[in-house]
Length: 107
Image 1 (cartoon, helix red, strand yellow):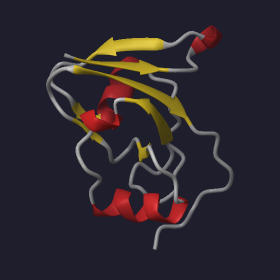
Image 2 (image 1 turned 120 degrees about the horizontal axis):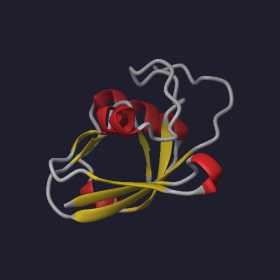
Image 3 (image 1 turned 30 degrees about the vertical axis):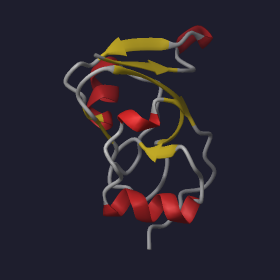
Image 4 (image 1 turned 60 degrees about the vertical axis):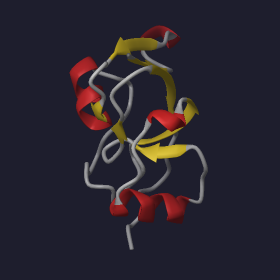
């Protein structure tokens, strides 16, 4: 069952949730009040960029919008939470929100 740890929740403690069915990371974050900031929710600003510290292999490949924005950012092991999907099944994923500067315009 995928277990997802979100670093940096209240009081500096990690928030850990089980999500055996996987799904959209955006929905999971909304359901558990994860400490990931969202702004546009359409892969055009990178506000919800996360660094995948463990478990990148448990994500579906990026869709075209996410892949374009990740290409602009040029970072490995990062995902855009509003677009990322987690596979169903086992595994452990550890995420950290990335501090962002001004929004990045999508191509």
